[in-house]
Structures are given as structure tokens and as C-alpha cells.
Image (tube, rainbow, N blue to C red; front, side, top):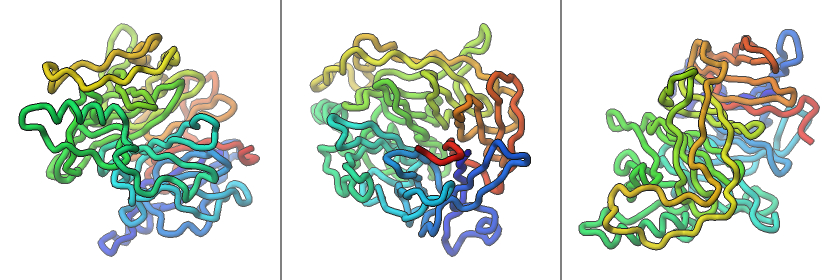
Length: 388
């Protein structure tokens, strides 16, 4: 069963009535085996105050979803009810954490012993990847007010070097920051900008409003992948220290190398990284996991400031993904969410046309699966019998 989040609407007094009618602030589910496709409205039962839903994840026996609305900005979780419904809304992560504002996507990894997890959350209005530590039962237990000690150790080393420079910039990161922004100041927070060559995330701010900022995030084989939409690149980081390991900014189409254009969504399936950028979905094999974690450098050489090279990747890590052209080059619109089902069928959501396409396993011809009532954002596949 395919779960879908939508653009939705902000429930404010200034919201147009037409937006409230067409925007969907809930998850819908679609059964791809039915003819015609059967739709299940309002997967989330008695959802309170959530709006502009984005990323979804099923983990720890719970369904997690990001809410981007200012008054309900955070990640919330729901317990299974009669499938495909989920209920018993619980707060997981909120905007009380300074780095959290308008979350877009999230992922996690289990830490030593399996009793705690480190979560990574991308945030559109701060343009950073935030990190928090959570323990069982994995809701209401994330660190409520992380201190700077919760920030990436890489950023601490960077601050030490910046402090030694003549006329240093503002030396501050939002509490909970794991990957910092390359832009700072209104409308973004007034923090230390980190050049993209150091792994900072780009932002496009026309007319004083954030238009393009950090988007999707995923973790695989000891590498954290982050979609830098404004920087036209997928960036890669050590998931423990935050050390940047490189970036991928193009895909291969026959004999040509084509730049990525505003990558937004990421998906790992069978050791391949899939990237949606515009109407193209490109993919390539993920690098082998690092043979050993990197050694955190001390303060960086002042002679290299402000645009030094990336730190040396650990042994066995290639520093990039070679993306090849996927079959989705003829879709008539920008691709947003992506998913695979357990039969190997591939799904892609089209935001503007409000449609979902399916590429059946072994086929080369994508076909329209269904139209949807609002601009689709994320897709999540769960077995029709319910998650195990």
C-alpha cells in the first residue's frame, strides 16, 4: 500500500478558503493491486493541529511524519490501528529545539547497544540538518533542549579555527545543528555561515524569502546523504562526526555528463541511490562503507581559510556516487516522492500535475497509477497486510 503526504495548507486566518478545501493535511493510502485503485482517506486518525505534512518513516512499530506548519512544526508519531489507519498521536520532536523549523525529512541510526537512536532532520527555515538522540519508547523522549555539545564535532573544530581568524564572523550554530547552512541572516537565523567547500548547505533567497533550501536526507552504509537543492548537489557526511566527505552534482546520460538540477528527494534501494531532480530520476551504486571511521581533525589550517578542501575521506570511501540516467526522463512534471514496493515496482509522484506514476518491475514504460487531490510530497510503501 502506498502512503502519500500532500502539500497541504497552513490553518491560519489568512489562508484562502480554496486552499483549505483542496489542501490535504493528512496521509492518504492507495492500493496498487485494485482496479481501479482504491483510496483510503485520512490514514491518521484524530490528527491534531498537523499541517503541511512531509517526510514519513515506519520504524520502532510507529509511523513518524513531519509537520511543517509553524504552529505544529516538528515530527510526530502514531501507533498502528486497523490498517491502514494509525492513531494515538504523540509528539516526538518539536521546534523547541532551535535547529528545528519547518522540517522536511528525517532518518535515523541505532547507536551502540540498540537502546538509543540518533535522528537526523532536515529543516527548510533554518537550512540545516539537525540531530537529536532518542531512547525507547522513541516518542516524547528526544532531547528537548540540546546544548552545543549535541552539535557535530566537526562544527566544533571549525569554530575553533574561525575564532583564530582576523575579524571572525559570528561564531554560533543553532543548538542541535549537525550540518550547517552556507547562508545566514534574515530570513535565515544569524549563525556562522559554512562555505559549501566545507560542507555547508546552500540556500536561494529571492526577495527576502527562502525559496530553495535543504531537502531530503537518507543514511546508508555509514554515509549520510543530504539533498542540497539550491547547491544542485547531493552532499555526503560522516554520520557520527559530521565530517563532509564529498558531493555528487551530475549524472551520466550516454556519453554526456549532465548537471543535477535542484535535487529534492533521495531513496536507497538495493544498494543504489535514487535522486529526483526536475523531471529526471537518476541513480547509481552507493559507495562501499568506510573501512574505519575518520579521525576528527583538530583546528584547521588558517592558511586555507576561507575555502579549504574537504577533509581526507576515510580509507575505502570514494567520496561520490556516479549517477546514471534512469528511465524517468519523459515524465511531464517535476518528480517529488519516490518509493519501491516489495515486488520491485517503482513509484514517482508528480507535484504540479497531482499524479502518481508506476514503473512496473521489468518494464521500460512508466504508467499513470492515479491522480491525487493535492500536490503529492512524499511516498512510503507499506505491505497491504500491514507492517510486520
